Amino acid sequence: MHDESVNAANREEGLTGRDPAQSETEPAPGSRIEAPNLPELLPTTLEHETKPVQPRRWPRLRAYLSCLQALCDKLRIPVVPEERQTFFWGRWLYLRILGIGFLLSFLSIWSQVMGLIGPRGILPARDLIAALSRQPGWTGFMSAPSLLWLDSGPLGIQCVMLAGTIAGLLLALNVLPRISVFVCWACYLSFVSVARNFSGFQSDGLMLESAFLALFLAPGGFRPGLGEKNPVKLAMMAMFGLLIFRLMFGSGIAKLLSADTAWWFNEAMDDYYVNCPFPTWIGWAVQQMPRGFHSFSSAFALFVEVICPLLILMGKWPRRVVALIWMSFQIGILLTANYTFLNYNSIALGLLMLDDGFFTRFLRLRGVESRTTDDRGYLASLLGSKPAEYIGLVATLCRGVLFVFLAFNGLIILLGLMRIPLNSALQKPLTWVQGFRTVNRYALFAAMTHHRHHIEFEGSQDGKTWKPYKFKWQAQRTDQAPRFMAPHLPRFDWNLWFAQLSTYQDNRHRFVLIAGARLLEGEPSVIDLFAENPFIGQPPRYIRFPFYKMTFSDGQTLETTGEWWRKQPIGYWAPILYKDSSTGEFKLTKEPPTP
Image (cartoon, rainbow, N blue to C red; front, side, top):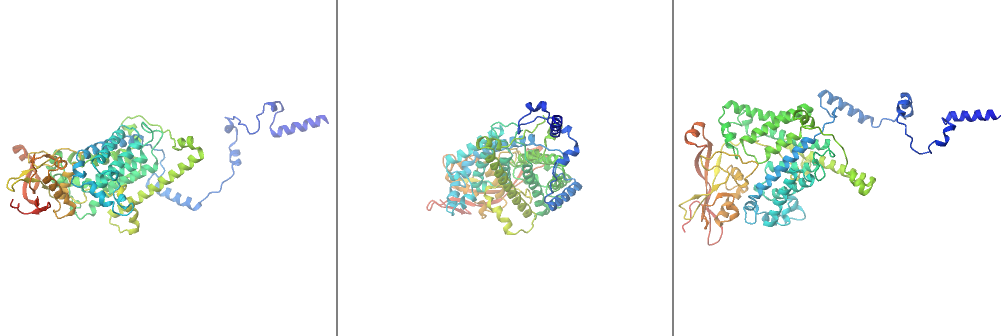
């Protein structure tokens, strides 16, 4: 009986796998057991047998996704790339160039801002804000969001310029990039929203839209370096990809659908270099090239802006080639003309399209390993894991909704450029953010300018002897060579180029007459917009606006006479402006009144 009970006990021990000799050293239930080689000891069939078979959910959705993946495979569109691409170097270069751009742009605006929107400037910001403040609720602020609502006087304007300049410098030095980008965006928007005629260019829109998206692109931290802990997310690259696509394809399709047929007959570049706002001496030389070169340039511009954007979706190598073509195209533009920071920003966007594999392979830069972290890690240390997870989820959802909203508005703008009829309800979301310039219309050179006229200012004390006001950047002398000025933008001189396309009766160009009135008053901030003041001590009594036709000279003329320009007077852009001493009103007259 004793032997049978022992054998029964031994059988139970064998079934349970327990050794009586090891019963005292067996770990307690629930404790961790280290078994590093356990997966190698288990048979493969046992692993599959022990896992319950999960039913496949959403079968119809899975079928649609499979068909989509098969279609993309046939078109060679890598929806899910085989190897994960990173963009640390492209992001780092892009943010540095953006920071330098904001730094130089704020310095440029600062040198002329008081004459443009100061209390005694041409278009005072104070007057606009006072008019908008009479609108109900937040309507006025939403149409012109600006920090200058707090103080539109000299102190407020100077503070905004100072804050933007410092933030641009910090962003260029990679110090607090997220905060620096936000300050740059807020200060630049504060100027653009209230500057009226002196802002609203497509270059300003690209700066603001790029800065807004960079809020989500920039890594966190004080000195994040390349930002290995914050890799660029796929959604972020998709948003910048959509921006680049709209910038390129929108400009190309606008050329083809414009009323100017010069693009269809390869004639758009025949006189482009001389008629652009501010050509360079290289542009003067290129203008002398034969007709065939200009025809090729027109066709190449359409190829870059219409065909190349479609290749961005075709994979890594087509995207790299498009980026290099796009940047080369922009370098050619900035060498021949001055378009503020537009071309530099476009080149920076091209660098952002290049993945780290390009930089490490062709430029021999060091590789970057992603050490992915999440902002929820910091929140978890403060709030606990669960609240941090919920906050991170809410932030991700909000960011996703914002991206979808911006992408939708970008699509609406692109369809509008393509002249596709749209329901007014589809365009309404665009008006909600129109004042913040987060989504902009890009239609560069849709209609070419085929002549060049100059508006100048001349003053007189007696109505007989006239003295000209000399510009800082516009060419007035025929022996003055076209020069480089970008990224500096002389906004007053630039707008005179737009004013010459219309007449003085056009309310959009009333600033020309207002500038003349400020000269009659001897306003120092407006006089500083010119190179020199011919009336020191006493302002003139009359201002007139001579009108000239400007063309490039040829190589032989330049060699013999030293003249880069041909200048032909064609009359006056507006009548003579004077101030009525009896009423204090500014009036226009064809002849100076008798004193």
